[in-house]
Image (cartoon, rainbow, N blue to C red; front, side, top):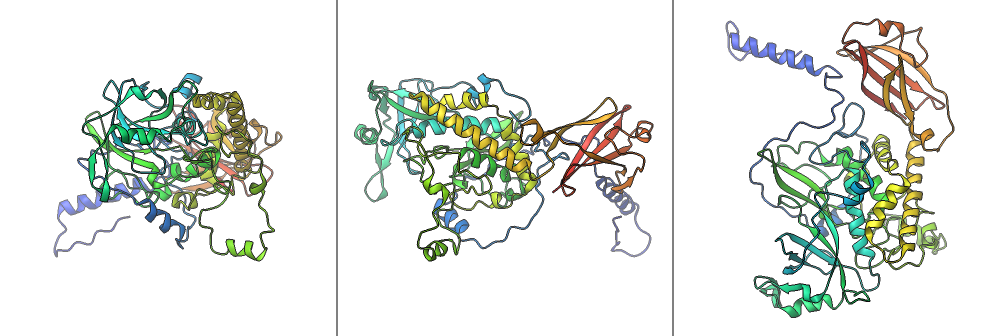
Length: 541
């Protein structure tokens, strides 16, 4: 009940009474646990925004801030979820392969329309950010691309990683740029008369053909004399800088949920562990202002996947990356000193193979619980068990054939590279499913069928555990008071007779458990048009 204290003496004006009544009704509506449209599949359309300034996030500042942060990470339930615990579609995340199986062609196609660069190419600038050389170019159709090569030591490694990464993260649900492999000759490139480079003292000067030659001099060439590059088409919309993995952007009215509490960013930890995306940081994201249906809003992209799998963009990935932070937490280094280096870690002696195009990537010692990005990520550190479970469901949606289809887009000249990476990703996928499905009772895909609650046990479905029995307890559920009242005579997954005879709009709940009483799933059902539909679910562990 909302209480209004009038600030004037005498009779309360009618408009004040009406306002009080309206606020009371709104408060009563908000007290309901479930609403008629639950569980929602997409967030409401974003509020229109106008011009937003571009902002930068200093890479060094973010690295130092997060590496030396002493901030605690309390167990706060994730937000940006529906009543089933899933992530609705939004400008951050769109359910794709985990919700509706994508075809082989769709998985290989990746984001957006088919727009590979068409020669001839005009170089319009040099890439100045990041650790790898590169340049910006426009193609014959006037489209802008950001171009990066492989390191001389590992031809095909970084370019394949960037192309494969864009397709995996897109299929998982994120917005990513269109990344293409392009094969070109020096004669396909010319320098725009408007292109500039940094000269002495940081002053801009016109870019010359020899500046482009200097870049190409350290780019590996194929036997046919062609250069293999990764060309990333500029993301749709007007770039306004990266997003951060904590807080919100105050000038964006749609950005209301602290980023560290978003399930789609917390669960990203599991996806990055699977693909070994150790360089998941603010600088490898991009916000753009896009317009759809006459409404301008901010869309959030993940970009730059050259440091996934066994690649670290400019060299093979250091074995430590993915297994520990670049700057160890206090005490970790001292422990090794005291042990005189005798405590050899398993990843230090792991077999990473010998394929230059793969780099350093493995699956045998990989532990999803211990995997780490290069430095602490606030959203990753806030993840809870149900965040991990949601992400593991998305990973397990990829079959062996799905994984191979995407890996093939790396266009490796050695088929052994495709086999190696595919096998490693399959084994890492299985470790993720086995690990996170064991931390909860992994029941999902609830539906009422033939008068009973049906579901999938994902651990059983994927062969991580044997078939098991379940115990069920039924309740009447007061949607406004959020009270559960036990129904004593009901103990199976069959709907109680009371529920079958209930009035329209009635709510019932069933709490399911199996071997471990701490791990339960409570499923809430709502009767509408004479049938029961799932309104929501909650888990304990």
